[in-house]
Length: 417
Image (tube, rainbow, N blue to C red):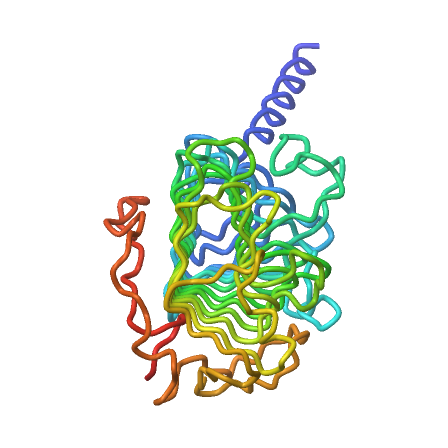
């Protein structure tokens, strides 16, 4: 009997130790390679591969730092969500970016619009989220009643919702996304409900099966969006709104961005380039619109803040239909010193290597394209360089300062070489 009690005690102890085991404990100490499910924190080592077998949670008050060159492979059967209740720092480099992806053999044409894992979902308790030189692809799965995000009442807190690749929701938090790529996603690339925000030098392409924006911003945000390339989003490149009753009133400064072919794969009232609504305050300068469906469009029943400023944007339409949809009207916003013509083919931005005759409903992206400006481009020297930016002095994240980029005298995300 005594021996039986001792054995039972050992069994309970071992079970207890197993239940307390950290999710990322299955790690090779030499390479840093490992697998994870459940709670994670600490550091994923430079150059390692992490296999995510189920939903992972960064606990409140803790952080996960992902070093340069890490590859994060998501299990496409489990379709994991990354829940950030603490902080997440993905700190890649140009030479060794971080990649959130799926197994290489599954990166096929069939899976072009992802849906094979959830996304990075930052709860209101997340105070800092950084993505620098990071690739996010094949995300955007649809929630079910069993989804961790639904059970935790995160994002839209119900089943049947297509997840964004990034959701951020702390009005007092800080979000910086720079030098990163969003591709092969089902719907919204990002959905932001509050915070001090910088999106700079990013690329968005091959996203949106039946809907979705590159950057979707709601109330509670003070955001600077600069030097981003958005190609052929299903709906808008930017959806800017003050909906949601959060403070502060959302104020977005978007400048020196390049938008190509956006909005044509969702030909509804909201399918276009930049959509503004619900008293959002916007300053929109130096943006280049090439073959986008519509110019900057407002919700006429619920328009933007009257203090908004627009100017020094360039519009190019290869067809007359496109050019006609750029013309200022009740719902298309005119800007000061905009470059806009009434005839198809005017104001060709003269990209170094991109065919402006490319079909506007083609979501596929060619990595050989070059959106820098050739000599003689009408976008050179026509930008506005003096205007307010929220985060010109920088946001301090994880001990490092990230500042909104300085505006350029050219229009668009790329100057001439």
